Length: 364
Image (cartoon, rainbow, N blue to C red; front, side, top):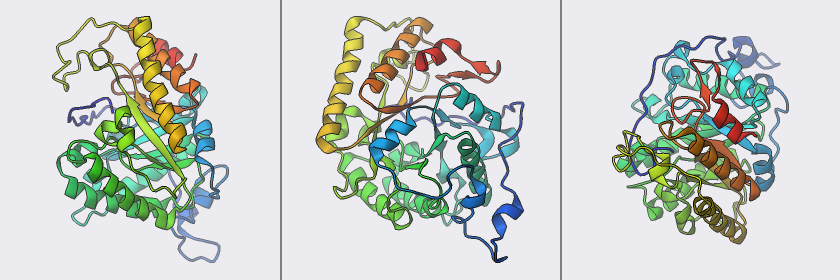
């Protein structure tokens, strides 16, 4: 995430956006089957989702091609705790699709919506269903990203318990969803989730997912905030070829996080520019190293986050954003920009329009 190397929780901003709420799942359409018996959660996808509703395995390299360009959504949005106060509305999925994007990465912090027995609240799950349905209606790939990396960073044992419980509930819920619904196991494992700890935990969590989704593609990244330089420490089950590997990129932090109050090393920086030939070459070299690992391991790459904080000079931010996106594309990677709204924004909710320079840098 943009909060690389630091711990920070985005506050929930109770701002109400105009427009229609996300689509509701009709009670009649999900509660009964043809034999008037209650339908299972997974079976209801036949009536819940638009388009192809039967799951068919897809090669992870092909999935990455389909994912293409995307954007992170719903981080810090009140939608998760109070649906009526959601900033993000159903119509924004259409704006995203019409804006040239093919994927949304749905940022979920599910741990906070669990009860004492680690059961996810029904209302939270209902909201998630609406989000997935809304994205699918616009033919967007939907990445379900469990994003509780901050909690996991300070309590590995507690993280293990909750992460397993999360996927024990979410994976079977979407087992019959189309292959355009992709699971991302955990965002940016860090601190207490060292490489050895994370390698053990990811195998255990993947086994839980595979019980109900044996061939759905799952996104997994290396320790140390999905750091590109930790790929060689990532240990994946060799016989599981339905894995997409994710990395995040915010280098150099002095530029991308200048003025960011949560990062003490860069909080007081300002006026840092970007765009020299040497700086562009650094991106190319960094990504070439990732591509070398990808070819050696036979794993496709997904750039799950990148961007430059809003306080930087716009011209430099545009150059950086364009360079990172085009370089990722030159290697055949999919990407999702951080993020739609909140900060690092590509969409201005107050103006109800794209931040034109950043949008055009992403989708020229």
